[in-house]
Amino acid sequence: SRVQDVKADKVELAKNMAFAFDIDGVLVHGDRLIPEGKQVLGMLNGDNELGIKIPHIFLTNGSGKPELARVAQLTQILQNPVHTEQFIQSHTPMRALAEYYNTVLVVGGEGYRCREVAEAYGFKDIVVPNDIVASDCTIAPYRVFTDEERASSRPRDFTKMKIEAIMVFSDSHDYATDMQIIMDLLRSQHGQLGTVAPDPVSQRIPIYFSQGDMLCPTEHPIPRMSQGAFRIGLEAMYKALTGVELERVVYGKPEMATYKYADEVMSAWMETIHGEDRLPENIYMIGDNPASDIIGGNMYGWKTCLVRTGVFQGGENDEESPANFGVFKNVLEAVQTACRAEL
Ligand code: G3P
Ligand code: MG
Image (cartoon, rainbow, N blue to C red; front, side):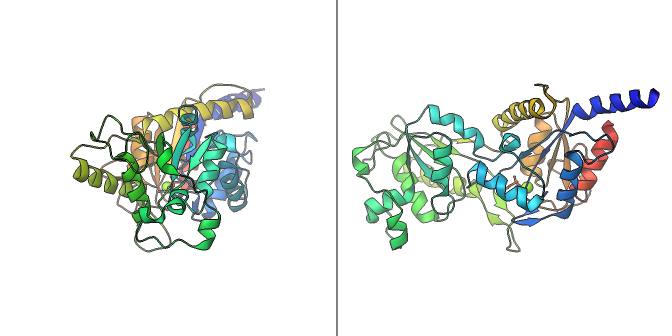
């Protein structure tokens, strides 16, 4: 019948659209649910007039926890299943680097969680700054090292080995120690602590950052500095100490590599939910940060929706990186408007 034909057409249209959700400032604030986030996911998971799953992935600059742990936490907060197969954190694409480097310094995050992240990615020999402090506390002269930290660290003689690359996975919890150790390694001969290379460039080991956000909204009334600010500090120090620019690689939104990775994840997720390994044509990015979510989505040819529940607090649209599909009060309004446009 005609009604059935119309429904079949709509089902095809629904499979040809998809959403990429930012997490902080769109679906949650820290560990607190934004209620429209739960509603939207219920709808996309099949609670809609077509009774069909509308493809969606999560694309966050968040970091510091293994994917498995973070999706378990988000599943609870959002009261909807979040699967690792549809989930990208800032450092998720960095798993590919495990093939190229054996011994790496992993920086950032709470306690030893980033060591767990790197283990899950398949890195074989993982060093964290505390391992180095435990081996020689004079490296970080102002650091107060607790017994607990000492007990959970893995000291070795780092002057006898080479660290092949530096991976900043998450926000530093101790800028002074982490910057000192990173600078020592960048200025060393091939990552051997205790040495200083005569020429700053030829023996320098590479450094990677999982994302470049300057600021991050937190419980504090004014947003706090994030990995981008830490990186700029390092770059300025490196230039002042060596006279040359620091070359580095940055992942996360709005970097192109992250969106390419997102395409792969989206196609694979389509295969999982609809048995079709292909990329939907109309992809909507829903984000709160014009400088990462929106500018990146615009450059990549996605339709971008800016919501007012996070970083963006401005007028009609962002002046520097305006969302091309529109600005919305919250994630529910954005998704409803996108669905009306497509179906
Ligand atoms: O800036 C760090 C992080 O909390 C941002 O997460 O989900 O808004 O990309 P998200
Ligand atoms: Mg956000």
